Image (tube, rainbow, N blue to C red):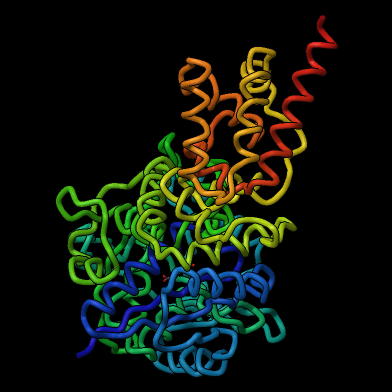
Length: 472
Ligand code: GLU
């Protein structure tokens, strides 16, 4: 039987990193075993689901390259099918109508709590021949077995055992007839031929309940693998308060999709000490049986480190396109500035994110408003005036504005004035870029362009003059 995995998000918000990791594991396992992955949108909670959330989830999956082979299937389009199965369960005697009022259920629970018992449905309607009060709203409950034990072999957690006596008679249809999560999941997993259910271990408690429904429907069970949660650095479940958790937020700050995937596969799965995995390797080496049993914690530093690696390794043309697009988004065109390709070549080894690359490229395309305060204080001082003015003359005489020629001018000046490189390069950096950290200064000036570079030196000279005047 060929492997079929599934990714079934509930579209109640963005795709978060935990969901993306679940999708990745399902995707990898399907690829690895030559099988398929189903994408199913679990949108039965009409109040909390939205088309916008569906769009955002699909976009995030596409961005990560987590392609699906079947679907997307929408649960809201399958209500007839769920209705059929509910009817079947009723006919078989595996489900029953329950007309208990909220007040009655609350009373029962109160009593149970007072007696120190676990609150649960007391089976009032289960075997009774209560005269059905027609017109009273009814839910439909699954008739969970009363005795025996549900045992399943979870690929990650090992043997899981739960006594049926611990389980409630689940509501499988609400008073308006709409089916509930545990029912729809089982019907879909059966109908879609799912062989492997790989999901977050927050669903482990649902599994034995679902297994009983599988049995009632005489369907064979899929293999279950429950993946430990992702925690924040403080050991609490990863959430918004730990920072970005939405996949598209990572795209926004300039994480490459391959870096995020590489990061996610290592969160809760390992292959020796290896940290870097390209896609083929991931597919080849991944196995659900190697998923770690303990929760993994999210480490932004490590994600940035991987991103840096992938930025260094990425195709230059691709990065140039990304740079142009991101500059455009900030209202900056490339006209009159250096080729995006050249900029990428110079900046790619110096940044951890694409947005950092854009930040580092800004002064190459547009004039900066102000100098960095500390950098200007330290480097744009009267001692630098003479050096900058003399250098400006030499630079003005350069015909071919190339890094070599610029460098030669700086070296000539160092020899003439008998000064070390720092004495010239640091004021020059601040003059050219507004701050004191740039790529090698000759390369930087080449990218800025001759006219702009000379203008900026003269702006710096004026700044120094002004400073002297203000503090005589
Ligand atoms: N729709 C569920 C969720 O987003 C997943 C259910 C499942 O994997 O069975 O948490």
